[in-house]
Length: 166
Image (cartoon, rainbow, N blue to C red; front, side, top):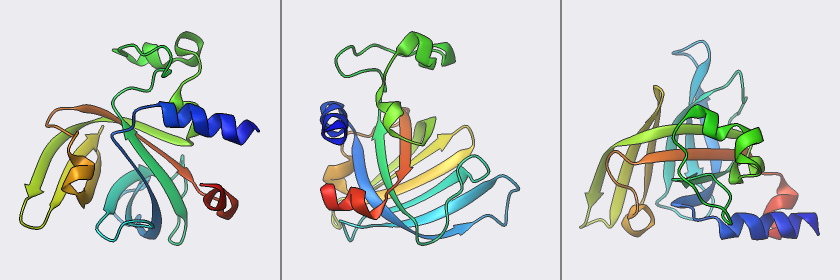
């Protein structure tokens, strides 16, 4: 019952992008605290995600399956508001939010977008305070991403029983 309510709350939130990925590998040889994950979509053959994460805070290994969602606003769907400062994200002020459903959240900015119309593919690059993301998918899936958009990247590991219920 609680899982059904949680799914309903999350579905009410407007995501720019969401997908489940299989982590192919994590290269943590460049930096002490950050590793670059290379991930393939579980559902779409065209979707690929490369992203740097702080692997000390949130360890991820090759073979893990993750669920990723990207949104412009994490405020509650029934009380949407503009979040301007780090204080706005304090749970004591914000209350419940879509972030409560994820284990790892980053806030950043889209700095580049490329669309290859002949291949029907798009690529979006974003920086989360120096941790970089490159997301490739069908152009329609990334149509709502624009240069200089402020976005939230949210991720959680997927257990096999979570996949059976979706």
